[in-house]
Image (cartoon, rainbow, N blue to C red):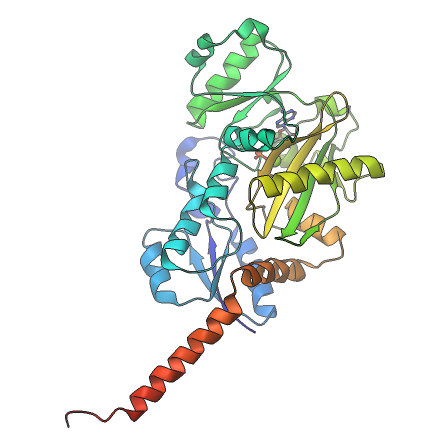
Length: 357
Ligand SMILES: Nc1ncnc2c1ncn2[C@@H]1O[C@H](COP(=O)(O)OP(=O)(O)O)[C@@H](O)[C@H]1O
Ligand SMILES: [Mg+2]
C-alpha cells in the first residue's frame, strides 16, 4: 500500500550555529542531495512524499498535512534533546514515524547517560567522566587518571568536536581539550579511557526481528597501528580512512562485536534502525563506544554502505526502514480505518436531508 510519507530533516544550509567559526558546526545536518535521494527512493516505492524541513511552525504544519507516517532524519539544532524534538511533536499529534522514540533519542545523544545504561546491562564500555568545565576537574583526584584518555563533546555525533588532539597523554592536554570543548561547543566534555584497538561499526534494522548488516572496520589509509587512529574530523575531511566491509575478523570476534551491538540496541530500546560504534580494548575485547539511532543516510554515510555490503540497494534500505516502522506502528491498518471512516461520513452526508433550503 502506498503511503503519504512526510520526510523531516535539518538542512546544513539552515544551521543557526555556523557563526561558531568552527569548521564542523554543521557536521550533523543534511545536504539537500541526501533529502532528495531519500525522497526519490520513497517515491520509487510507490509512496507520495511531503518534505518537512525543520523550522518554526513545524507543529501547525504537521497538523495540517495529514501524512500517514513521517520518515524522520531530523536532528534538531541544539542541546542534548535536539533529536527528540520532532518525534515528541509527532507523538503529541498521534503521527507515526520511523526510528526511536524521544526518550531513546535524547538518551543516546548524551554519551554519559547512554554508557550508564549500557554498562548497567553488563556490556563493556570504557570508564568515563563528564565535566561541565575545566574547574570541575579540581573536584577529582586527577593524579590517579590513567593516560592516554580521550576527550570529546558529551552531546554530539559525526565526529563533531573530535580531532587527533582528542587523545590526550597528560594533564596539560586534558585541560586544553576540556577547555576547547566546553567553550567552543558549549557543552560538557566527556573524558574517557582511550581504547587502543581496532574500530568497527554495526548497522541494524528491525525490532523483534533484526537484520544486522555486515560488520564494517574503519581503518587509516596509511597503515599505522589502531592505537594512533582516531576517526575524527581531520580524517574524514582528508579522506584518510578506509572501510572494510565485511570486516576481516575471526568468527569469534564477529560474534562478540555483533553481541555488543545487539545488546546495546536492546538495552537502549532502539527502534527500526541504528548504528553502533565498537572498539577493542587493550585485551582485544569489543567495547561499546556509542550508538546512532539516527544514522546518516548520505552517499558517504557508513550505515547505507554496510547495508549495501549485505546486497541491499539504497532504495531497498529506505523501503526496509519504512516497512519495519510502518509494521510496528500498524500504519496500513490505521490508513484503512481512516479511509473507511471517511467513506461512512461521506455516505451519511449524502443521506442527510438538508434542513433549510
Ligand atoms: N574512548 C575512545 N577511545 C579511542 N577512540 C575513541 C574513543 N572515543 C571516541 N574515539 C574515536 O573518536 C571517534 C568519534 O567518537 P564517537 O564517540 O564515535 O563520536 P561521534 O558521535 O562523533 O561519532 C570514534 O569513531 C573513535 O575513532
Ligand atoms: Mg561515532
